[in-house]
Every structure is written in C-alpha cells, then in structure tokens.
Image 1: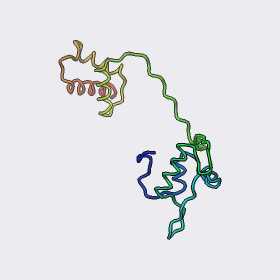
Image 2: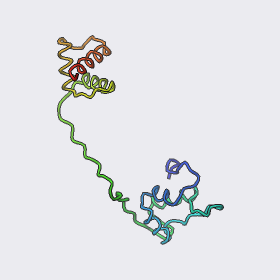
Image 3: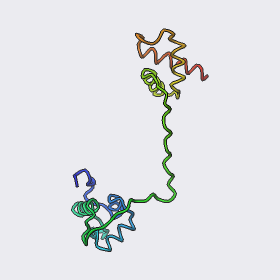
Image 4: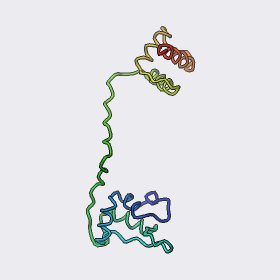
Amino acid sequence: MSAQDLPAKVAITVSEMADLCRISRSRFYELMKAGVFPKPVQHPSSMRPLYDLDLIAKCLEIRATGQGLTGPVLFNRKSKKVGQPKPKAERPAKSQSVDPAIETLVDAIKALGLTTSPQAVSEAVATLYPSGITGVEQGDVIRKTFLHLQGKRS
C-alpha cells in the first residue's frame, strides 16, 4: 500500500472506510462482525466509531491482499446502486480522415462558443480560401471562418 492510498484525513467514518475498500457498508459491517476487518475505535468525546490511520492502513491491506484478520477472504466488485443510470456507450468514431488543420479550426471555433462539424468548417475554409490556408495566419483563418459560420446561422 502506498501513501497515495491513504486519505488526507486523520480519521474516517465506517462508511468512508467501506467506500475506500470498494465494498458496500452492509458488507463491510458483515466482514467486521466476522472478524475479517478490525473494529473501529470510538472517539473519546462523541463515542462515534472511526478508523484512524493505522486501522485505515490495515483495512486497505486486507482489501488488497485478501488476507483478513481471521484468514483469507474473497471480495466481489461493488455493485452499482439501484436507480443509477447506465453509462452511455460512446459511438465509434466515423472512419473519415479529417485534416489536422481542420480539426484545430473546429476546436478553436468550439472554444469561441460555436458548435460546428469538421465538414462545415472544411466547406467554409474552401469558400473563404480557394487557394488554401497555407501561409495565412491561423488567427485570421479562425476569425474569418468563425464569422462565416456564424453568419450562416443567423
């Protein structure tokens, strides 16, 4: 276990410990009751259960190695909570070869707040610069292309 795995806090709650171990809180309590994980200490004034740095390190070591206080233990992945939407699968990119200069222009125009496609930018550049954009300052190309595309939307 590395220092990166440890939280920035000196002590954490049982729920936070379960999250760090990537298991549900109820499963964490089951394993704690079975003796796999150590029991938390109680805060002196509030009597609230918490895990200090030593116990955090021990719990993370148990989770990483699968060797609990009472012997080996198997962990399943933490399931998704009910009601959470599934992540949408991204559509594969179209297999069109887009000129890197056009891609740069699309990104610059999008940064200016105008949503556009590489095809629209390519057509605008062909209209504005029939002989190409080689040798033309990029700022001028971005400005004129942006204004051209913005004029088409109005």
